[in-house]
Amino acid sequence: MTEFTVTGIRYQMGEHLNFEEKHVAATKFVDSLRIGQEVMLVFEPDNPVSPNKAIAVYINYERIGYIADEQCDLVHPLLNEQHRGKGTIVRKDRHVTFFITIPGASENQKVIRPRERVLPESPLGDSFRMPFTKSENALQLIAGTLLEMEVNKDNLPEIMQLTKLYVPLVKISICYEDNLWRSLILRKLEHLIDDRQLLGMSDDNTKVMEVYCKQVRDAVGDMHRTDEHWPERVFINHLDTLKEDKSVNSHLYKKYCATFLDDKIFAEADKDKIASEYDRLCGWLRDLKWSELKNPKKLQEMGFRVNYLGLSRLELYDLYSVLLLIEKLETFLMENGNAQEEGVIVSKSLENHVLKKNHHGKPIDFQALHKCLETSFVAEIKYGYEWLSLWRMLYDLNLLEDTTLTACAVQMNKWYPNAKKPCCADSMGDYYNPYLGTTTFALWDEAEFKRHKTSKQSITGYRRLYNDCEAIKEALKSLFKQ
Image (cartoon, rainbow, N blue to C red; front, side):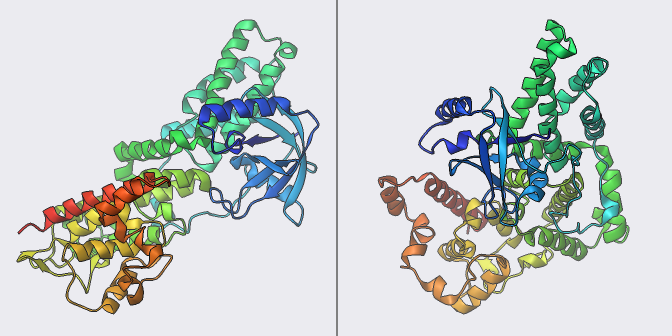
């Protein structure tokens, strides 16, 4: 019998409850469910967290959870033409999770189905992929063997040994395969413990397997618990591991230099060529349709999105390779300064037609300016007007040439080609537009901030934007001291 996991029940218990209250309410709800009770399945293509993938679970026309993200690919073919279906509750556990069966599901369904790439093809080609780490190679072998092994008395010692080896590796990666294996292995261990008497397990072995099962269950829960940021941490730790791995230099940097830098090391390569390569790799990120993957400086947001997109291990390494090379190229450009004394920008992506080349008689370091802006949250305000706060910043600091708003708008659209709302002269001149005013210009006004502070609405995000604006204004001023 093929089982599918229903998760996310806590988060359906009401936004007014804190996490502990949601946990208590969800536990009571799961306890109240009946084995054999029918549920409805509904595909949610516009789900904000997992678009074109999420499948909601309803009881009595009320949404009570979701099919586990890593199992959605298996469930989609079982839905009807209206992308709906039915299931039956067959089991529940003590950890706010229950399990269903779906008509038409086969015991022989493939664990991992052939899938289309989520990301576009790598800008580096297939030959630049770094080798997987030793831990990942061990994980693939152990997890695959554990899933294929039949549970019986004869295999019990080997299953226990494999589980012991699997547990330390359970949270080393957030690729699609690893997320799927975690869920499937957890179900296998839970069934093993439920059948402990039939298998003749001793009390000591039962206690050991219960500890292992709890560790895997906690790992599965952590990857869905956004408030603790586990997926983001795993993503960043994985990237740091690759940075320190000697194989990165031999399998990535050397091949990259040989192919894209005319077989020259970074120190000997042409600066314009390096700048062009930097633009090309950054352009690959900017062209991705998920905003959280566009900025290599915001690894935490990138890790969050990667966890929900379900990237394959190869796709994950494509992303890691680009991030590592962007950092290497950027470090070289920063260490080698500007190409010319008058402050002409090294990277073509930083060219401008509206910024002054001098400020109070001092050349403007455009590269430092761009880096300062790119690392600030306010430079990518998510109201669709990404360019507006940047323009206001430059205006306040007297860094804009005496030119028309139309020329400024053309420049902003070059810097922000993927903005939800294209820049235009009318929008830039509309100081009093109520939609724009409270989310952009007002961020520069301390009195306006205090007014929001005393209002009934939540100002957590507003405070973050305001503080960031103040910090970046000071950073920019330090670049242009007389």
